[in-house]
Image (cartoon, rainbow, N blue to C red; front, side, top):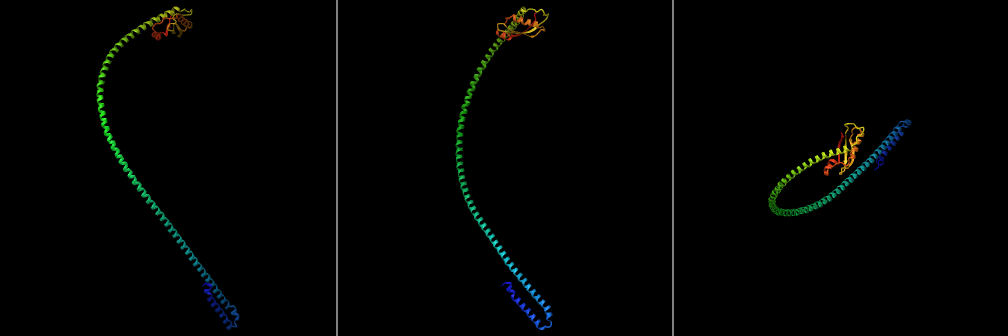
Length: 299
């Protein structure tokens, strides 16, 4: 039933009431028709209009309430549907999670079985390795015993050999000491003889050097031609290089007299005196006369 249908009867009764009142006023108060026309009618019409407006407002209010009620019901149904869908989604998710966990549990169980099998195999392998290691250690122990016996035998043989070698070494040392003693005596005699020979040779070389040096100076003096400018007391140091035959290779004044002519005359005197007297002993010649320096002092 609509709002209009609900309030149509009331509206009709109000309208009939109004018409009846108008009729009564028209029959009973004829002399006051003008008053009725101007005063009561507006009140009746106004009341009717007010009633109609209230009825309309009430109808609209009821309509709005009905619409709000339907909207509320629709929203509630939508919320219920959303809640149901949400719960269904949660149930589906929980179902998927449960299936996933079941699969995971099965996979874990399978993995644990595999790990258990691998662990069993590992322990079996370890047991086998331990048995092999025990056998290897037993074999090594046996080999060590055999090796120790062999080493003991070698050690005894080595000790015996060392003893024999020690005795032989002692005998050898005695022989070496005896030989060293004899060699020392012979060496001492030879050294003493050699020292005497060296001493005699040194004495002979010293005497020969003195004698030959004097002879060289004498021969050079004999070949010297005194310059006119030469003063008394002049002297100079001359370095001489000789061949083993005594021939002069070079004569050079190392420390001059201050008179160049005198110095040159000294060099010329050495060159003119060539060959100079030299020792027959080649070693003495090499040490003392191959290159030597002497002081030229003619007076």
